[in-house]
Image (cartoon, rainbow, N blue to C red):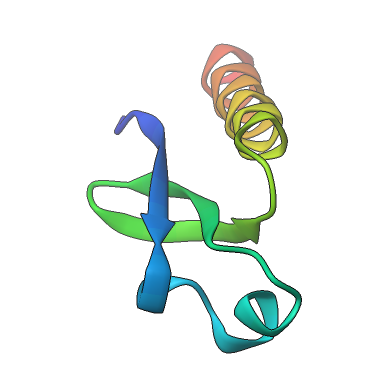
Length: 64
């Protein structure tokens, strides 16, 4: 089972719609270097999502 992590991106890596709103950074939840959720406009929001997904995965494994 791979670990979910939060990755930040800045500048031109931020999606254009977010940059148009004035955001200079955003965050993604990633697994093995691949974005699985996001972009999020705050690190806290990305961490909550990563935590919830980790909890779901843990529950799935304990049910089998």
